[in-house]
Length: 177
Image (cartoon, rainbow, N blue to C red; front, top):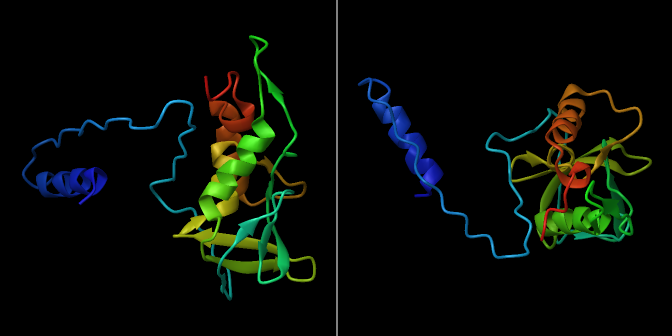
C-alpha cells in the first residue's frame, strides 16, 4: 500500500472517532539534477465521447503524438518549440522547450493512451493516460501554453494555475541546478 493510500485509509478510519490523522512524512528521493514530475491526485478528465485506445505512443519533435502511422495534436495545449531557451531573473538560461518535450515524453512514451477526437479532420485529440487528461496535465505543470481559442474552464484554469505558481516554462529560476 502506498503512503498516500495508507494516509487516506487512516484519515477515513479516524474521521468517525474524531481522531485527527497525522500527515505522513514523505521523503524526496529525486536524484540530483532531475526534474520532479507530479501527477494530480484527482484525475482531470472532461467528458468526451468514443474513446479510442492508441498503443505504443511516441512524441514527435514538434510535441505531437505519433502512433499507428498518424500524428495526433493535443487539444488545448501547445508545447513550446524544443529550442526555446528561458531566462531567469538572475540571468541563468535553461532549455525550457526541451524540458517540456521531456515531460511529455516521460509521461506517454511507449504507453497506451485513450483519445477522443475533438476535430477528426485535423487529428486534434483529447487524450487520457491512467485517467489524467494529458493536455490539462501539461498546462497545469506549466509545460504547455493554452491554445488559441480554447475556452473550456478546465484548461483555462490549469494554464492560469501554472502561470500563478510560476511552474514549468513560467518559472523564475531554472528547475535544475
